Image (cartoon, rainbow, N blue to C red):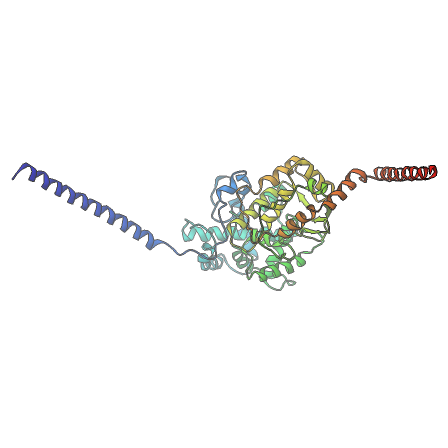
Length: 452
């Protein structure tokens, strides 16, 4: 056998070995992927609790992070929140003392809802069944007891560590409005239904929803003129019109803040940008504080007047708005009303002069320190957020404002108003000057006629 034949045989053997190794490697990949596909669970169609996307967190991660209490699995066991676990046990003890069920009964009831509860979270929860049920029971009873304590303050014990520490109650309520810190609402109703129903309430679901609205009412921008029962009627209308139900507290807050009636919406051209508040005023648009009973998003425009409901800005507002926007961004829904509202306010406010104008009109009442803080708040809230052009709630207002500003007559009238009739004395001086000019003109005419 020649040297060339030896080289050829070796090459063939090397090729066969290489092919066998490649086949083996490929088979291992196939086996691995088959195992992963086999273990792949179907996606839930009921998920409604999400981690906030990174692009929304860039400017203020703290706004989405609980300060004192973890609710649900996404922040469970985090260091700064562990101290509240003992309070949860005490609240569970209070709950059981009022409940018609034993602890074993409660565990069994929650266990039956475990699958449905897990499906409410966007990501897979890496907790055993025992850990998950224990967490849900403790967190759920804690929330129910906090809600009940707010409506029945006479039942609060002297050693209560939440209600007897005002700063702690404020932070607990704030933490209950975070998107990543939620329990499904149906679980809370399930636990609440284990307690005796107040005689004046029609059923446990309505009762707990009403108590929740009362708990969050002064935290939200809800008109004082509206009673909790009026708000309940509106919630029932809004949820029935969308064929949905309240999913958790963040969803409840979004529903409460929705406008009284949705406006007819046409596809919005985002190239259409309205001027700032001061520029609109210079163009002849007048700003008015809307009626006291109008909810936050009931902004109306007609005949050169933009009516905006009152907005009270406090330290809690940034976290609240950010989490409501995050839920609208993550959850599939027909409208993103809160996002649309912030988009409009962001256009109106670009300088401290814009803020000062809205403050003078009593549209904004700020407790944030100065006008610059208000400006920065609105200019940063939507960083990373998307808008839906087909359902933009204020598209009609944008179009009408643009048409109004395009009229030269409106611009001339605004110039007259701002430059010559901005005050009583300025207006009187202008009128006097006009009369003097007319008299001078008449005198000139008569003088000319007498010369003839």
